[in-house]
Length: 388
Image (cartoon, rainbow, N blue to C red):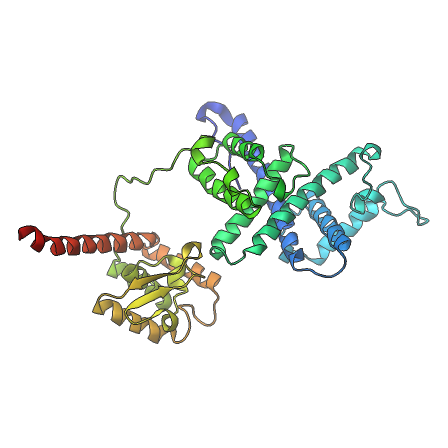
């Protein structure tokens, strides 16, 4: 969910209240979009019925999501659908009078049926609004279909973030007046409109850079990879990676002893010894990753879905891998009674309590030590030739 630029401190209570109202409205819109997104994902693999039936089902469920949002069920997800939601929808349809007392069609029936009437000049205003809502659903659907074609590209987190980002872009384009747009119709003016929209919303340059990466992915999948320019062409500044200090964090043994869960302790030790990321360490499977002289970080856990090898250089690393294999057996560093999400919460809670919550600094420490080692080896290799 995007946030606007901060208001000046002298704006007063009234301005603060307005800002809170605006944030609440954006939150409600975002949660409503999440329910739409959930329903589209549920229908994605549905092959029952004709193409027209599938299209009508998408329209009806989109309308049901908006109705539930309007009735006060903000934040509802598809998995949280209950009997009371069905009762609320039935009561709303009955109140709208979709069918008359004697079976005749009421004036509101075309809108509830998905706006099948395509004669725009004869539509009431409410039906024209419904037509606009269904148009943006088509763009959301197109973007989901594009992602399904290359569902193996990138990590789970990358694919999830891209799905949400593209859904937000589709909604933004709809609100900016580009209604009826399909994925293949992406043009430079749409990209420029999105950048202006982000800038007006107060997004940082780093956030806009991330979103532009998703725009390029969209353009590439519809055969328009060269259409999106460089970030500088849109006035997006490059982020600075220069730090005023080091981010390394060495593993403190006294703090490590405060971590009660053995699997979390092992994950932290692996992060320090091999420079693993948090997810890579939690999902680390010693029986699969240990290749003797190197450790394989598989694509499903690596950032961006790119596998890599980390060399095993010391006896301490070898002993640690043997300990990890003994603890995990043939599986990952996740107890059998938990899944990854549950183990991650345990990891976050216990590292925070032990003062080890900035565990990504362990990766920085590994990288710095490895760099210094490589530089020292290079100097030792060159020095005999230089002296001779």
